[in-house]
Image (tube, rainbow, N blue to C red; front, top):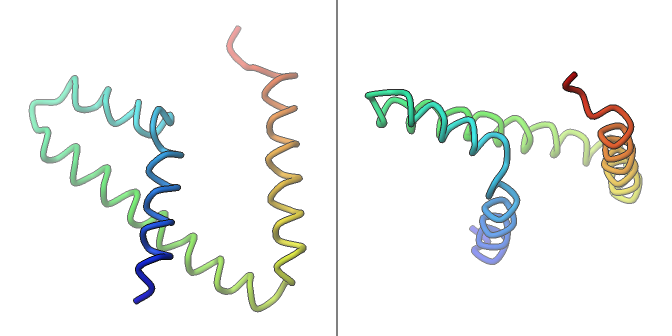
Length: 92
């Protein structure tokens, strides 16, 4: 196992998730639930499953599309979504 990749991935995902809406939703579930363990297990299981899907689809994508195109596509998607959120913030 490549521990450098594992620790880098852990650090980046941990920092990206701090204050994320998923974390806030989990906080709200824990605040209103009597079973904190059930909230933790449900939340952790969901994050594990989404991570598994990302790794599987990422490895398939790596075989089909050159890495430079994936980077450009991901960057373009982030920029597009950023503008979308600015222009259409939702709510009332």
